[in-house]
Amino acid sequence: MPKARILVWLQLNENAIRRTPLWLVTTEDHYSTIPQFAVDAYHLNQTIGCTIPPDRGLELAIPASDKHYTARILERRDLSEDLWVIRVDPGGPFQFKAGQYATLGVDHGDKRIERAYSIVSSPYEEGLEFFIELVPQGELTPHLYKLQKDDTLLCRKISKGRFTLDVKSGRTRHLLLATVTGIAPFVSYARTLYRDWKTGGNPMPGDHQLYCLLGASRSWEFGYREELERIAAEAPWFKFMTTISRPWEDAAWKGETGRVDDLVRKYTDHWGLRPETTTAYLCGHPTMCENGQGILTRAGWQKGSMFEELYFIPGKEVASA
Ligand SMILES: Cc1cc2nc3c(=O)[nH]c(=O)nc-3n(C[C@H](O)[C@H](O)[C@H](O)COP(=O)(O)OP(=O)(O)OC[C@H]3O[C@@H](n4cnc5c(N)ncnc54)[C@H](O)[C@@H]3O)c2cc1C
Image 1 (cartoon, rainbow, N blue to C red):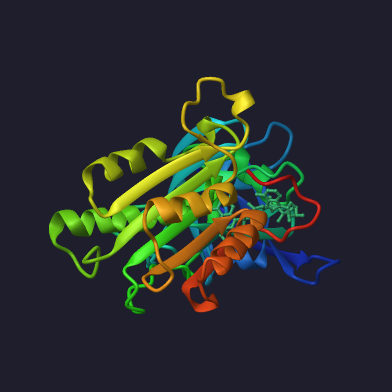
Image 2: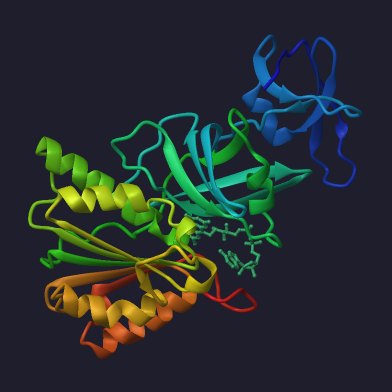
């Protein structure tokens, strides 16, 4: 990304429509107006990231604010035409527990668009990792999809969410059910436990055991299969199984087929999981979460021992993996 130095900083008249002040910024060769919320982020002679569109003024890197950091993309990995992984520098201190989510966003015109994204990385790691699916008709993901290494985006300074590992109920087995990007919080659990297991950290894994069943339409949509299979091969406390629901589009696939909900009973039996000793977590597509909870309820799980993280509200959407 090119750099520019702020030379002049002037307050202009109020934006007639929104009645908020606009500020003019000039650098060596270009100028730009920025809204009030961006002002605190800049100062004279500051060098900032920017893009310079051919026929417009300067486009500044998204500024930070009281609530937001300017996060920067450190790496991008594309899995398919609509799934990708980014690792970002959040832009300041960012605390979270495995299983929580960050709020990412962009400013588009005068509009700020933000959405929740589960954090894939472990709190032990530098930077935050996200696994994102493009929703072509969506408001935010088409903008996020365009961002490449070194581009900036907004990241709220505070993590949120209660989809963390239940280490208090006394149930030491954890059944993790996910579709596609819904694996994100479970990768964070597994990486965190793995690190604690290796270094004698607390409080995990202790007696805790993870049993993870992940579904997608096709096998190349499993963003973390190799990593999780490696952990499963090494760690006695981690079991991992994948299934695809469109084997006719993935002829080389030799593993399980069907949706996650089709296999819940099979794998709870296979792994010997009982409601009294197992907390269930369901993450991703709302249909999988609903069906999965129905199946577990019929097998004896109670409301308080099942947690879900729905990624969107069901309705007009595409079918689940
Ligand atoms: C706690 C939490 C954690 C989340 N973590 C992740 C994550 O790790 N990775 C990730 O990719 N998303 C995650 N999401 C979903 C994310 O917040 C956005 O909703 C999603 O990226 C779509 O945003 P959008 O603005 O592009 O679409 P929107 O404008 O919000 O949605 C447009 C339409 O598409 C539907 N829709 C939204 N998402 C999907 C989808 N995946 N498939 C089909 N239809 C959809 C909406 O219901 C709506 O009708 C999470 C959501 C929550 C609540």
